[in-house]
Image 1: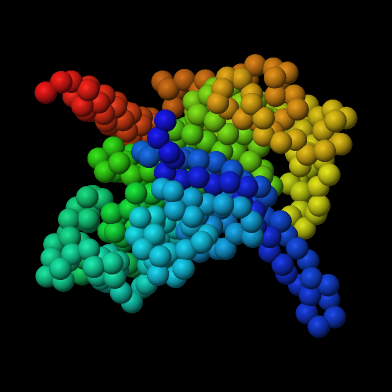
Image 2: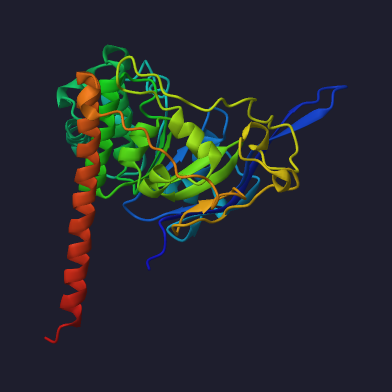
Length: 377
């Protein structure tokens, strides 16, 4: 098996706040002992409630935020050991798309100049060819190359997110961290952007770490999923396995909380009492125990660790993972959905189908190359 493109091992982050002249400083553990890996061409989705640590993890991958502990390796490179020059070179290969496209674009800079800046910084094209490359990137994300002379405020939210994607693609990265890239957009524009990300993955072989709380988007785009609760991974595994038969109560809560696309349908959900624990607290028990209907005495005695839960290679941090009842997935019935949601669903399926077709094609090419190499000449 080939080595993963990205490997994250036991990464943690603590923020210290307060203190002052006479006050006492407080420590908030926002990310705790996170480990996962990502293969080339795959999409690893991080999902969870607001405040669960998703964005902090994404930014630590590029060292926009420095982790306190753990190891991050990209293509065999120890990211935490890099000096400033080496880190700049790494960021050509790893890019990020921020949640707010307008906030990530300078309102005083034309979008052509914003996209051209990383190309010039990394000297990827002769200066005379940069304008053509900018037009090519805008066309790639579904915009007109003539729009390069416009300012960010002249575009819609969906168009600005496409510009942010074009700027990330300008340096020809191998990995893009997508931090809630569609959460601020309406449903139809969300589907268009997700469809675009899927097509780029299929055409360019880009890998993604996709941060989101939208389970419908994650299901159609991600190949693997990591569920975060209070700064800790509670379940990981292949996307379809986790969605079809989740083995952690929190994952089930997230799936049950997904709004129905069918008008006037109200889902029956278990009441979830309580709130996520404060990051300023210390834990000697399962972090989800106070909200879990399946808790038992051992859950209060120590914090469960990620362990194998059938079917492999899924992991769950629940002592009762094997005992949980069969998950009753809600079938909303596509024929009962609104026209807008059916359009969105079609675009999401198209994105997944294009990526899967490209993956199969790549596997066939690799197999053919291997056979050719073994054949006598």
